[in-house]
Image 1 (cartoon, rainbow, N blue to C red):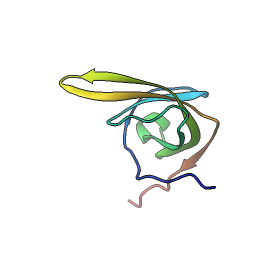
Image 2: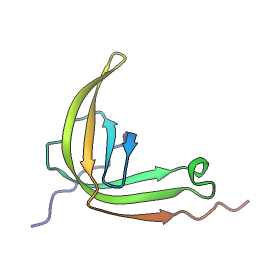
Image 3: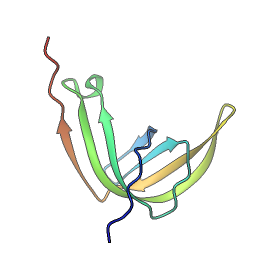
Image 4: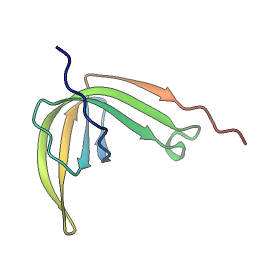
Length: 92
């Protein structure tokens, strides 16, 4: 049986390693939720074109965070598999 798909959720990455990601979003996700992740590496980091890191992972930890007056959710995930996709440079 296929898993249900939801609308994309935007977040801010706080930490990344070859084994997982930690990011901040505005909603809770249950533990063990399977995720398709896309992390955009800007050209300022890659020194070339923008690169997308596409990964499959699972939620392993969540925590409520206070950022100013706003409550957000920190999500730690595994990265079970990943690959890189380069975007084509824009024409001048």
